[in-house]
Length: 433
Image (cartoon, rainbow, N blue to C red; front, top):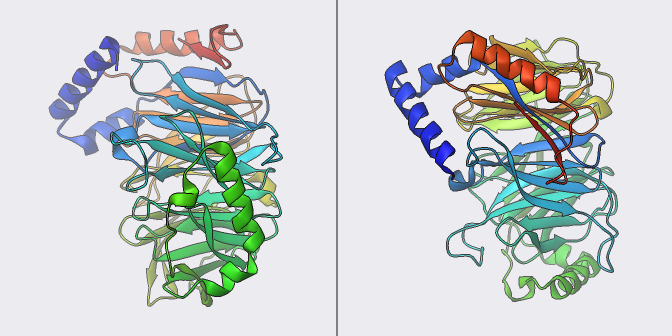
């Protein structure tokens, strides 16, 4: 953390105390978000996913994007008002993996299996290359390679409560549960899912499909012997990849007797309002809530009762969403405590909603780029709202503190006027006011 970041942190703490706490500071921040930073990534094509690191509190300063064959990890906190590139990964072909485009990402907690005593942040990425690469931020390289999917991977999911486990979904509906340290597939089933989510305690999985329906699966303590016997090729491929990449997966004992209980599948139903379009994003929030979003922009915050019944806690419609196809998806982001949800639309607009009431808190728009927003992220203190859209653009809207209105205007004008200039010191084009 540089001196500017230290000063900014002290100023924020003072302002938060003066306003009366985090809740009041969040509202102040959301109501005064202004465009401060525009990043154009070097691949100049769609960014398919943006994920804030909520898996490890000490690494909450990190966020990551994936697009084309690249994954980039950024530091959004420790460089004063700037964004810094921490790790840049290109998924090139090798003798162990075909390489290719990436479109899914998830942060993993490395607690209990990282080789670094001070801790590590690990990012799982996958896509047209069906192998899942797990990147260590500390080592800036792939430390685990999960092999077994036959088609491109669409979704990845993980939760801090189960730091060893990773969930993956491929285009052919193959849903897999992995033990990351040992590079072992614990379970493999076939579904009609288009999106997935882990419960906070990693005891269940929610899936959404192209017809707007929701299902739940239990993570059970059933044996894995049959699955292990059915997939020797995948296990041997993983072992070979581990030896080649220098990982130690072969010496890490896998989790035993954990799998997706296919027989536990149950449909979640709600009397009255429901989705009628393909589901493109699911997230579990604290308090037993599930948030679902369809391609048409309809969003629900559900409470699950009685095991299979859904109660509507809040609902809203994101304007100007094209709908009709999972390919038009926009993944939403939320704060760690689930109070606020950030989401975009097909016109380059971003919105923040109150998850409890469904009220829209803020609406901001990208400058000079009218393209679908593919993903959004929101910091815990609501000081940063990020959106990815267009040909590799990341827009970061910020609350900079109690600045005069003319200072905000100058910042916004500067970001717009400098958009498109290259920074020769980075593989990314970073435009900062």
